[in-house]
Length: 402
View (cartoon, rainbow, N blue to C red):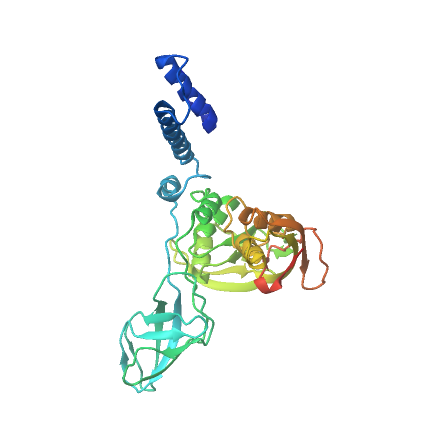
């Protein structure tokens, strides 16, 4: 009889189907005689093939189940269970919210769930709570997207009234909305889990960055610490003695600032740098002291990309597929690859790998990258400062098919 011990100290062994078939044939011959005809056209041959197929499916399933104890391979609710062991959880879908000004006849009550439309995406938003227009006919209310997801709302685009309310005449958002999000994918959740493993620590760079990565909406960040008693210039940022510097992409200013207060060392100062300076007042929860928290938002750096590739005739629109792969990489949507976060350099090799990962049949001959200025396409890695974030938009990707 064959040795069916396919689970070993090294993991689950999944033999080739031909190996499994030979083992089942050997078992049948051991029972019915070595001269048994195992041709697939015979009844016993057909039965052997069915048993082989069932055994192959079982072993493949065993291997997939075994992978679920590995946080780098687990998926769905099984990954959620592993993530929960360190106090983390997958980010659920969130709706975009936007604050808008309503005008009309004084005293008019615009009821909750009244709807307005955003003109860029034609998305419908509903009023969260009743708004009563004041004596001047003005009011302010919060609108929420009817469907969850990352629906971008620029300033002055929520302008169309959908629900007719007597006395309500105009609506407009003077500022951009707070971007929502879809339910976090397995790839994004794995990335966040790795970034937040030190969440339960204090006064360590790993603990602070973990806490910041756990803030809703935060997608990347850079962090530096000056533990000297004198002013230091660290990676281009002038830092006060015993202070920290953070440049954070995503999340609200209040949430980021509150997290920095909760996690930094007592007495440590904050710094602004060359990025977009943020200053936020936060009340320290234990002492009641009001603190001015400083941090930066990243300056976007546009990157130009040139791709020369060869695609088989069976692919309908290789240019769009190549651009989509690069965009997916930039947003961290490709398993096993990184993303373009704060301070992350841009690698032509990584972009080429992203194209190949999503489109294995496309042969990439060349990927060149360049800043807008100075314009100099090459395969060399482009450095990004810790107060910057690289951005690659489809309009800046040129694809040459050969």
